[in-house]
Image (cartoon, rainbow, N blue to C red; front, side, top):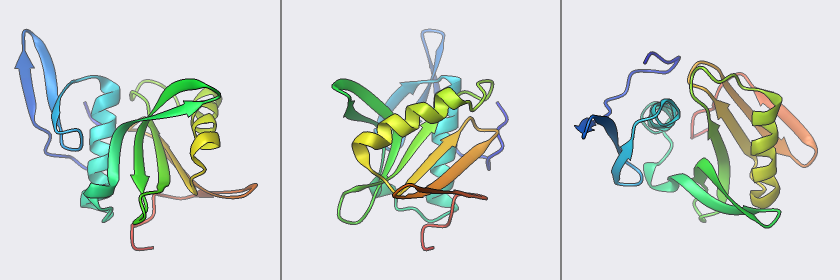
Length: 145
């Protein structure tokens, strides 16, 4: 499946007729879905090409939103272990919509991070948040910036 992201060396394995991939952050085999394909490529791109430390990124992070248990697709933490970036991924054929934006905004009401990322592997949106000020960025910034 082609994405608007650099190619990534992702380990695949077939089990009982189903494809699985090795999740390098969860350190286990995960059933391959189009959304998972996007998550793995995107976070590997951030680590390999943009310099984000792998040890501070996590997939499938649980949180409470208005009393309900939810999961962020990925979270990047600052050096003190506080959430810094929430990432939400969709399959390539799922458009980034207002509903997708609402989903990540609800997650941020619980986590209060300064950056949000949305991607379906074809389109990527990144914004910085400072109070009520939201600034859309042309791309995901390098870690050092």
